[in-house]
View 1 (cartoon, each protein chain N blue to C red):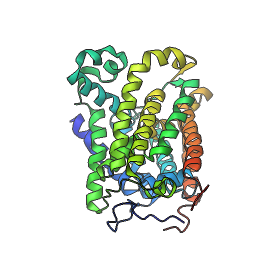
View 2: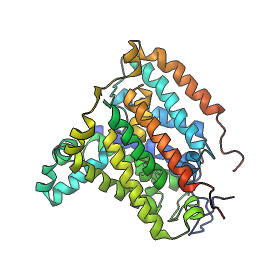
View 3: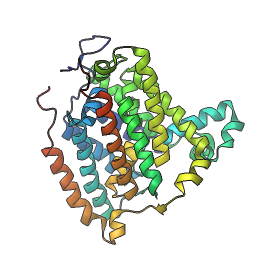
Length: 176
Length: 187
């Protein structure tokens, strides 16, 4: 039952990514060069809907939250490495799977490179953990937790701001 | 200027351009997240690359697989029959169905932005795709999440780690992309 639910939600996610062009190397690299912000608008809309929806659930006590631990220097280094991979491949770990299903051979190779990168990380982990990850561990902190307020107080206006921003940002600029 | 022409296989289709507007796509992704948070947990993808590695390695070389505590812990029980893995399995399935429904398949090896800057050598593109994939998953596992887990799920929960990761990600991706695919030396 849980497997089926996972498959159904994943299928909806994959279809949404495919239909909105998130698996297009052209769309992604043009977004990162700030030439065509369609993909940025897509992500900001998803976050805006997510902020409001997730915190509505939280208010009603139905949310299964899972906040990731903060490691301060490590998290920055990780994001920087990921960003280079994102620009070079034009995919993220999820959209590489989407692009692979569309038949794009470079995405297949990105998935293989990803499996290799994940494997290397798995075997380097004990050393990396002592080196960087343990340097400033703060646990699963949230902004509202730090401020000591209810998440929805921040999430609703921020979600609205995201949706407003998504609407206001320029799109493909007549390049269609 | 560049146009979205296919670099190698001119099937008449443009790359795989959106058929859904950014708002419809964004709302759809947001709704998947909300359903996932209501029914199970926030969404995530990159952990499952480790799980697949672990299960494959455990089948071939069980001793080597068990040597990595990270692998053993992440691929708990060396099984793929989990909600999390089936969610990730659904992604290419949904993409395949969507591509079939809209006949937007593409077998081009070299994307147009790449060939404009680096030429249409497929081997060159494939080598760098591998390197890109390596960096993606190395970075994602280092940070404990990727675009799904950190940017969409994490930021929606107002997680500080996810905001830090996302800001660093975009800063580095924008600098890299502008440098790599920039207009310098363009023909």
